[in-house]
Image 1 (cartoon, rainbow, N blue to C red):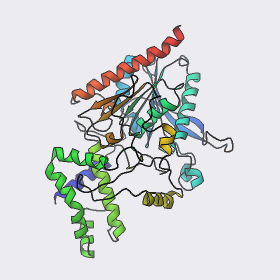
Image 2: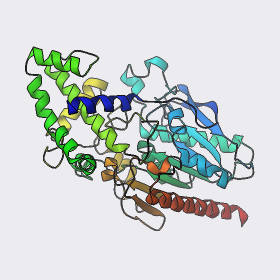
Image 3: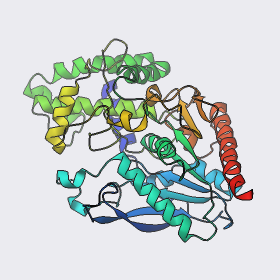
Image 4: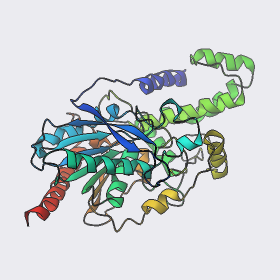
Length: 417
């Protein structure tokens, strides 16, 4: 019954999404090219972005730009309090840009996910090009913004985008705060078992008994569901939306549970959170370039043993989306571990966050630094200030502000000479 109680609790938390607007912003749309890298496709779509100028001094103050990730941009705007907290101090213009194919920024409307010729434009490089176009436009359209320093912010996949934005377009964005950004969670870089080990460690730290219950639950599920009576009982006991009937149904249930435990580990914040972002096991819905290996051995973690099987992953990707993934594409495009040529990036990682296993945990150079938050969960530093914040995240935010000021001073000096 302990498993049943935990499942009910985690289901409730997972579904607990509040859509209240916590901060003030205006909503606008910018016409983007569907394909930024070809002259053959003339299609365009409207990309949503949110903007707040309450603190903007109109005289060259910085632009704080959130690189939207996999979800409705209003959710990220309402849950990235750090940007709002420090905007008055910097007299910053605050902008949140929605990622193409999410929220209402659908290049082909309701048909956006129906055919490969439509979904093929869902890539990180196209999204970054969207942000380049948007920032370039806004700096020319807003009085006083022409010489403004642009600082990119992002958490999780958005943090990856913020870091890559600075790497690929340093002439557009002058610095990046990349929180919980697993840019190293790719083939042949990070061991596939590390993620599961850290999820298990998070649960074991709070309750070894709970971790053991989860470890034993997989065999218990198999035992209960060996016959029709067991399938019916589990369906009723857990109030499942659809009755369990086939082995594939059991596999889907287990996969769902894996995501539940993973998400709970990610949002192990030191205070009650009113938002749990929809973060799937893989950051982007078209499994082409973001191929992140995960595996479990059932010994060092509490998951059911599951080796990393790229062939199976690729086949599932093809069956679902009609395309085969490229496991080394992201590494080749953005450099993987070889980011020594980058500059002005702050990577932050909380050690309670399983995604930290794929994060940058060392200082690459004097201007590409890593901040470790021992008590931090998934991009805790980007959340708003809270009385229950641990000292390590408070210190991390102070260091982040120092770097932001340095980037502003450095960029502004170019126009003062």
